[in-house]
Length: 255
Image (cartoon, rainbow, N blue to C red; front, side, top):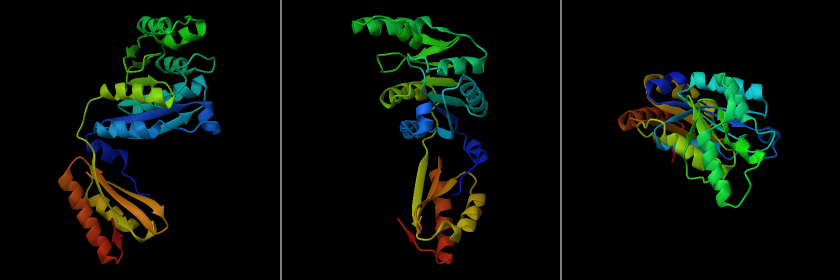
């Protein structure tokens, strides 16, 4: 698979976003990860690029190290998982450690949580209060989920891991990121293995640095060649040149 590097992404002027997935249940295979694709789609719709994804377990140091690595390499970071009421929900502690801050109850988050708990006729137990914890200096991120809220500190947005809740929190987070030109794409199908046209795509990519070119195999002799970027004319030019070179090399194409 041929991929555009970070240099091409920067040249396209897009904000880069990192995604940190947190949870032992993901790494063990007990739970299927369902938040990556929705986040990528939200970002693409706003003209933003998901640049990197990492997965770590429920370990404070691992979370802190991953947050620091991602926030240093990307414009924004979104996390999923580990902000619930149980003892193993330690994302907030890890994020706080990454920023050198203290994890504490956030007054705004506690007020929102208290109102929700009262509306449901429940007790604001110590376990439920844990969901109002955030690193010192964090701000609550309002979203359409009525329960415990997510929050932001610096360029990091912290969201729940439950897919239905994550979708609402992530949507609110993405709206707080600057909009860019929506990513456009064109494609054709190559009826040949990647090895037959790898050099051709490398040549086209070098000639069209503002276009991201990817090769995505669907079967042995069925590969989608995708041209994407924010300039339709440049995308079409790259696609046209690639198609011409494929034809010259007797590589059959399809849609």
